[in-house]
Amino acid sequence: MPSKIRNSLLWIFDAFEREPDYLCKRMFGCDAAYLDGLLCLVAADRDKPFNGLLVCTSRERQAALIAEMPALRPHPVLGKWLYVTQEDPEFEATAQHLTGLVLARDPRVGVEPKPRKSGNAAGKSGKARGNSVLPK
Image (cartoon, rainbow, N blue to C red):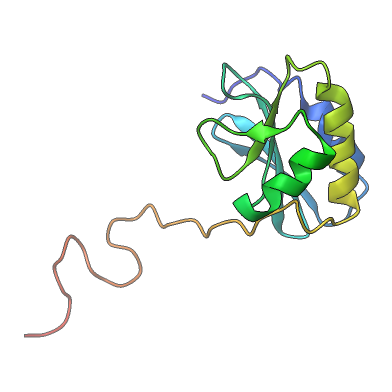
């Protein structure tokens, strides 16, 4: 049954509402913001270490973002992404700065989402658990 509890951090994504290519999706019990097909930010209103804002980026881009926003840290579980916890005194300012970067299409923020794998064991190939459908 879907959760009826609304993510208290969804206000962060309000800045994207007028963008035609904005999409908000649930992801692992959190909410993810996509813009122009890129996964940009994840608002996580859960227990530590998923209680803040995750910045979808690459390791190569982390240093530049941290230099600009010192509240950011590599996420303790998803180390390729950066993170600011809700408990940080700079949380709101950092979240607003990040939404500005996303809206400006800053290339340091946003990653291509990985394609979803089919949940069907047989898939579309006609194979199921190693059994071939090819004639012998």
